[in-house]
Image (cartoon, rainbow, N blue to C red):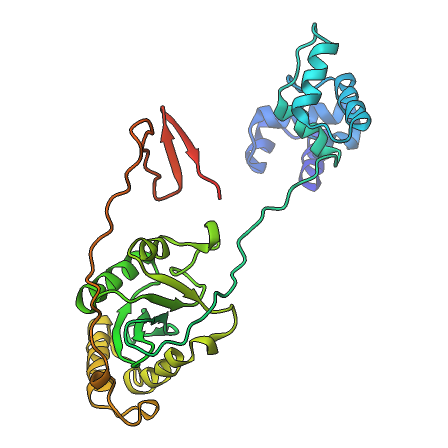
Length: 334
């Protein structure tokens, strides 16, 4: 506003348009536009003007919008499809708006009751106290910590509940399920399959966006014949034996931290051997976990591919949750 007023004032004093436009850094077309607006509207013409269009090509006539609201008032339980059908019958000569337009009108006036999406709330499952090896394994990620090279390390650990035997401790760079699949598959091949696995409700053991919180990893376990136990949220003491091992792991293998993942994994491997075969365990009457643990008699075999009846068509869901069918992409919703 101030710059436009100075521009017009100097024009009125007799200065040339071209010179002023160069000085103010605008084109002559813009300069004449400002000056002509001043001559038409005075000082008010120098204010910023609204950029709102004078008319909307596809704007719904207010009579039709009023009728939509009236129908909703008469029939509060009706939605956009029924109201649109009523408009077609009442005004066959008028171009009927789409269902989305009718819904937008209702939503704009606060007449749409939005449903709250029901999300899975993690709950604990019944927990068993077992007395033989491989009847129950415990798995968790020890809290992440930063290595000397400034990268975060997420150790994935697996123990046998009965004997406290440390089956795996892998230094990973994230909690992505791809890494977890690799660790568990290697452990299953080496020690066999347990009857059940106890975890918390975090990623990748559980998924809030899936039915019953079943992540890809959890579904894989079920297909292998492994039962799932989950502790209650906010109750780490329900996996207390495993958490106590994490404390020992932190004290003996992460202080000080190693420089990179390779060096940190070397420390973890040394800790596994010492923890299992050289460290007396007070809860085991000072025996070594390696003296009590024996591998499982259930060998690991990848589950068979799912088979469906011949009249069903098998379609693969992509990693991002989309289903492609007849050149159309549909997002699968839980």
